[in-house]
Length: 243
Ligand code: ADP
Image (tube, rainbow, N blue to C red; front, side, top):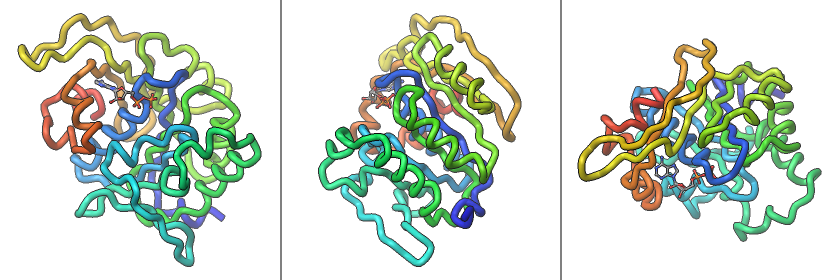
């Protein structure tokens, strides 16, 4: 039943061909940037083997409750404008899912799609595992019947793998974020050594996200401490790249 996604206006899948390129970072900052613009945002963290968003949003260790209409996501802010559902909230040991087999992962992904009581949301940001594997197919298949999906590809440099996956699965690419492109020097406030962005854009939602985010030590620190980087640095390149 599509009941729990009925109040969700847009779904954005965040994809990356490889791990460690900043997919969870971009998912987190995208949600914060949208919140900064007054939107209601949900984050679905299906990165089964490395759910890092609870840490980045300072929500680790929070409990997910059951209600009649499913799991109640965790609100990460006082205004209750960002809600988060992460596999990290359900695992007693963070390394547990690493040894799960495909069918168990697929069942959990399906349940995540159908059983979370999101309520009304402008955007649902879905942080997927790294790669373009079976788990991605399962996520796309589970979500597709309910809403048109937009994919945001995050990469360092080459983005062909992500785009090939989108083409194969018929996912609309709403933008490409080239992460850690150049270096945002905290001392001289300029971005150094940025390489040209090889982006692909297609109009899909009310906005098109395409940009490059430099390697920024202040961003790393914000993520480590679970602080709102967008709130602190509204003039940052990350904010302008994501809005
Ligand atoms: P992924 O989800 O692709 O595995 P993460 O989002 O967890 O990658 O990012 C990996 C690490 O790189 C994290 O420690 C994060 O803080 C850092 N990071 C990501 N993007 C940036 C950036 N633009 N500037 C500085 N640090 C970054």
